[in-house]
Length: 426
Ligand code: AMP
Ligand code: GLY
Image 1 (spheres, rainbow, N blue to C red):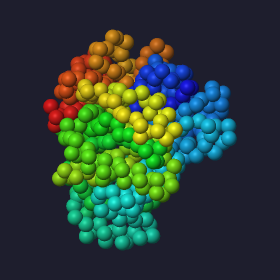
Image 2 (cartoon, rainbow, N blue to C red; image 1 turned 135 degrees about the horizontal axis):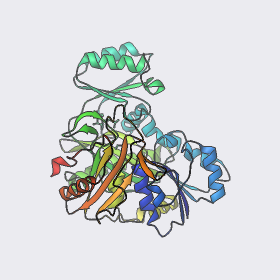
Image 3 (cartoon, rainbow, N blue to C red; image 1 turned 120 degrees about the vertical axis):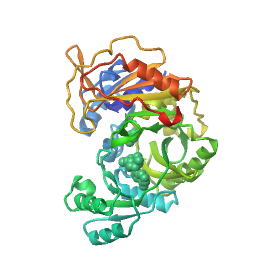
Image 4 (cartoon, helix red, strand yellow; image 1 turned 90 degrees about the vertical axis):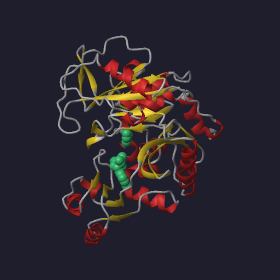
């Protein structure tokens, strides 16, 4: 098959690496990709949100499958666009319809969906300008801490956990009255704070059947010991030791099955990944959020641990035979350590020359590229998250240690990374 993968981060490098291993993959194109994906296929200078150009490219290269990495093309409706054009409607699109992507694109929509289908989640209420004063009263009467979420996509920055009523009221006002997050904050979900440990569970579904991939845990805070501001993710591990068979059983019966059943009952077209952001509260799973794509950096540990052929899974998704697929998992642990630009997630400089990439890596290590570009013959930084260095290990400790050892050879000005990924399990 000729396959087009959309996106340019570490997640897409890991997906490209995995797709390339399939015998069914003939040509692989990545739009726009990065220097890492270029070793798995051909990068194409196209924006994942330029649907017209993507459709033309698909016709020109006889693309048979589009795999969508990031959320924004999905929320913008790429599935519906490709399917509604008679010249591209035959293409398998791995990613939900615009309606399905609302599970990530609107937090209020996701919360209402969970309520309709009795899926465990924090109690909540939604507010807009119209019922602003009610929101103020709701906050004043609410226990602390209190969680405020801008309804729409806000690049991972739309969630504020306020520890005082004053902070909550200020956040509420800046989201709704001062449009801090633009239109994404016109509606705000205010919800109960849940205390527990988080993990990410991934399913591939066609809206009827599903398979569950290896679970992962990501480390969102910039600082060691989970301190400081949230980032896109500073590292991830898989498996997650506290996700034992009993807990996994609960995730399946209380979260995954009712979600897929809900999609089916509501006639929502959904062929792609569902990312369940979960929190374990007293041994019970609660949904913190849905995403309509794979996680980053979780993909950088999930794909290495997936032994099944990914294209076979995508074809089974399309053909309605996912229920006959058994997910084969590598028994080794995997960990990824994300190397970021100094200053990230705040202001940071780009264009720093990255040294140490042109070497033979340890046999258990997979260096995934993210915010990095080729400038002449040099690799230079081009984003906050620059690299995700994944390693296999006999256990999580071993895997993290191997990645840290490899990172010793990498150098760029002001580089930063966490040395404590997986710390609770070591
Ligand atoms: P999100 O952008 O939805 O992934 O949220 C960012 C982070 O905020 C999550 O990973 C959680 O750590 C935290 N969070 C979100 N909602 C809640 C909640 N109801 N209770 C506790 N923590 C939460
Ligand atoms: N690592 C969290 C995310 O991809 O949203």
